[in-house]
Image: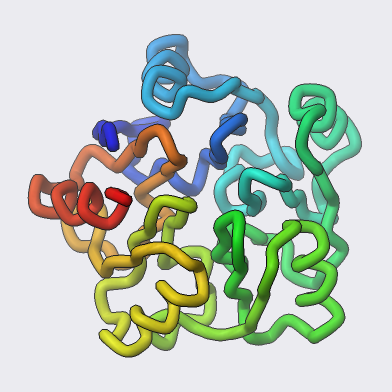
Length: 223
């Protein structure tokens, strides 16, 4: 996997601004040309430029996989239209659940989804259908309830919170049907999602991510 250090708006917290799957990367509208070229070269996707609820925190509000892109109920009609028109060949769905920071509360790949434990069973079922996954469950990672913020997954692998126990990691790997490793990002942050975006083709990490952290990421995402 090709891994490149990157920053957005002068910050290493690139994952809060960007969502990607294997086909599309949703980015803030005012990114410079050089940044857009780095994203495209690394992730090999089409770019969709928009905001969500008039915010550029796209990675916080959007969740999804290669089947679906899930948008929060607070997304504006104009924003939904931009994404739906650009991503015509996958499911784009507005999910009417209490939580709006979907990127923080849903950890998913194409097979399974781990959800914020405070979701109701009905909400969990809504998310399962919208994502098109085989299995969902509510739970935590390393006792953190905002599960989407402490992991990045693809079908090829995943990196989760450094304090996830060995038995927990084994269960999660089995649940997501892919190899998972523990690690950190941006010189020691356990909130993996805030500093990393990845798909099957490549990954971008915050510029303060160290060499040993990158080696761990490469191991996590090598099939």
